[in-house]
Length: 310
Image (tube, rainbow, N blue to C red):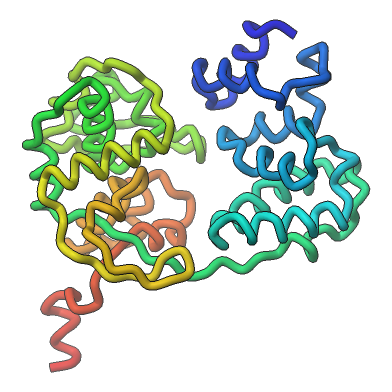
């Protein structure tokens, strides 16, 4: 299996070419000589569905193996994997990884020895609160002058998400050609649905900016966003429940890769835009998902709602 055919296969499945090339250098391709063998393996099938391989790397660690295979998915091994995740990761992260692996196993249940495996992989998520930026805070980031190319790229992508609500994977493919008659229209990579959003007054400013590098690790994105927000003075103390505990930290510490879309949804909700409309603007197939992106303080519910209590 050549690196070129390996990268070509994954790049057609939402993987970036650099990201796929890095995977080619890891132990998660060891022992397989052909691309077809790899595609049919547990690792290959998983990577065709997911671009985050955390679930696989932790499975390999829990089994003390470089290359986990279908036959490793026995009930005892899955139970040990669940316990290993809970011992090393936040409960919600563990739940996400188990769900990703279970989704692959359900489609290929003929290849695994464990029957009724859901019973040993169930981990209930803990409630977790998130933050959204206010319009004034987004404006501060808009005015911020990046110190280097990394900050410029990450600010650009973040602001585009804030202004149109698109996912980061869609932002990478949106250009000025997607704009017609005051509307931005694109097909969501995740849901395969056509999404149309009114063009924000600042959108073209960011769409036409040069890009230094199209790909960054999520850890780099989050670290850079926190740094930018700190420099912008987004540092009010915030207390919320996250990762199984109450924390009280400066707001910039809670900013991450999903904060832009949460800010987009929250600002529309504060303008009393119906959640069904926000869902369409964000490319969500279900408004229940949209509700998770809206971060509104219960003390800021507006005059209409307050009239009920007064």
